[in-house]
Amino acid sequence: MTSRSKMAVAFGALALLALGAVAAFYSGQGRAGNSTCSAAAAKTARLKPLAKGEVAAVQVASKPEPVPDLAFEGPDGKPMSLSAFRGRTVLVNLWATWCPPCLLEMPALATLQKTLGGPDFEVVTINIDTRNLDKPRDWLAKKDIVGLTYYADPQAKVFQDLRAAKKVEGMPVSLLVDPEGCELALLQGPAEWASADAMALIRAALGR
Image (tube, rainbow, N blue to C red; front, top):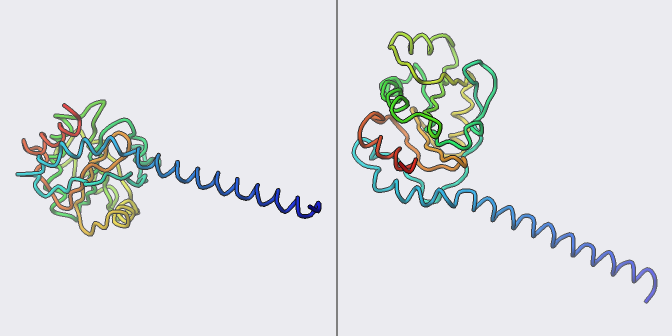
């Protein structure tokens, strides 16, 4: 065998090894991605029978998947994202002052936070008003709605990102996310979040 042939064989062997390594990497990534939300499947099994009554419209995930790392502003106006809540179960709710059903459920969301909020759970309400940016805070103060940390996205990109990922079309929208960032349930429209049905659903997600 000529030296050129030997080089060709060597390069061919290296190429096969490289392809094998790439395939193994992506295969591992796929398994990791699936395992990330594998624990969430057991939680959704507990949740499905509880999507009834006041929360009957909640769509419990049949196959939990990671939720996009939604970006928004914290109470100090600085950028943050959903990944900041890893390690906690969160109920993400998008609302706006121009959305009457959103305003109707805000007191109940505050009650839910007051009742179940703590180290393992938070109601994360994100305002998406793009004009009159003082209006949402003023409305909350006027209605004496307290206990909810103020998060906002003045560009409303968080809604666009969620719509692109989940195909939601209207407001309000609520997303229940587990500590690993996996979707447990989705609700398009309002709910009575202070009801016994809602409390039972959230407690089941928390394993309480």
